[in-house]
Image (spheres, rainbow, N blue to C red):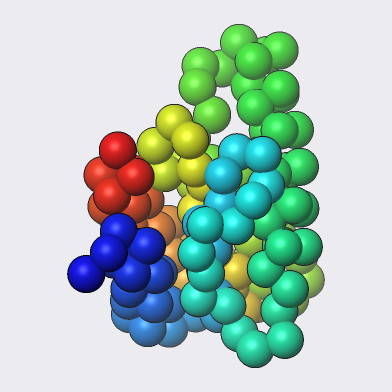
Length: 122
């Protein structure tokens, strides 16, 4: 199995095993999609670009306020969450959830998957 196939399989597994997670995407730090497991009709290029913008804002805030290295960015809307978690030094895992999400479980599963993805990318 190729590396990209393994990454895609990890994303699909994450979404399948986390009921409140509606989609997941792995992107480069500059907003280019690497692989995704998104619901039909979701524009992965657009999600990747918005994710990179959120990540850049989070990185700057952490740096300016001297809070160490950025680990995650969490965006909460009235209909759910968008979670960004570092997957190694070159990529970010983005998860999209519904409004009834158990955030602790999503964070737990996404952190584990981000570690696996970071190993795949190394």
